[in-house]
Length: 142
Image (tube, rainbow, N blue to C red; front, side, top):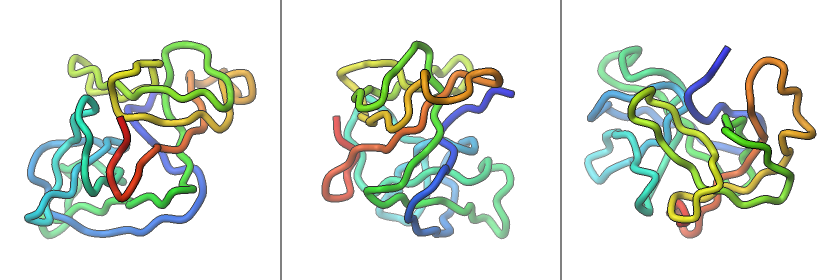
């Protein structure tokens, strides 16, 4: 069963409720803008104050969606399109054709570091790795 984005695995985090300013899917990286609303993040630009969608925007209750705000040690399952080993730093890309975020080795996008690589994770269901998003002072790192 494929998944489109980042799925919480373990580690510290906070949750918050925000108004959806645009359509997004569970697992998307979201910007928390100054109006306390949510929109899908562009992985090709540094993003301030980000979160991970815990549900699709269409599942909002009373106009608000619940998001996960990661801490430095929060780990996520992330889809990949090639083999990756632990310790590798990778870029995150977004494919607008299928609405999917994935780690792809890019050097010009938001960064993540692989905690458990494809050789350490069961790949029988989907291509995935365990990773941490890299950010500094609340901003995703390019």
